[in-house]
Amino acid sequence: SQQGEEDPQALSIQEGENATMNCSYKTSINNLQWYRQNSGRGLVHLILIRSNEREKHSGRLRVTLDTSKKSSSLLITASRAADTASYFCATPSTGANSKLTFGKGITLSVRP
Amino acid sequence: DAGVIQSPRHEVTEMGQEVTLRCKPISGHDYLFWYRQTMMRGLELLIYFNNNVPIDDSGMPEDRFSAKMPNASFSNLKIQPSEPRDSAVYFCASSYGGELFFGEGSRLTVL
Image 1: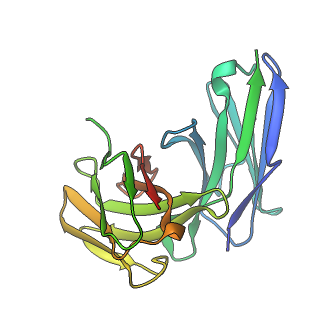
Image 2: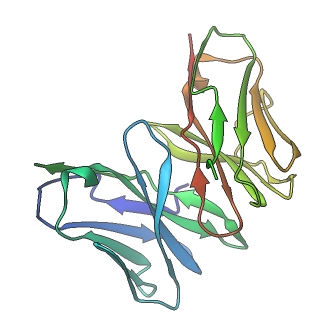
């Protein structure tokens, strides 16, 4: 079964707007990761947030983690057409930190 | 580094044929993962290795699937015999325990 579940499944926004994507998970984790996948390509790591962190920034990306609600959000500010991709959250399995389970992903379309 | 290298990028074969997918991980990485991606099931972890040793193959769908890692710079995933339901994109990824680095995938079509 999926550990991470992203929401919404699809998101369409205008260039310049912010995109917010959410991820919920079931069991305790020590970190959560977000990945991007462009059409026909492999996944690319975006950011890792540890369980003792509440917020992390990387360029136009902002990730939050709420361990009490078992949820995370990924915010892309001032979106660009090049941000069009699928976004996945990934969490490690209990007792096997290197074994990542991915959600089904969110398809983000940024209209120019 | 060239990143994780997978071959072939595309494979079309007929049901019953043997399929071999290959992966060269990033030098220095001690974990290697094989994932399968389909529209219906998303990304599924098939098997992963640590220091060339298989750690968890619980995601391998059935005995038709096998994976080996004879050395730190090579792994292969074999399907014998292949079936149409094996059609998917197969990804190899490597890491040193943190973030995963993915290859570009091998798109398999079984007719």
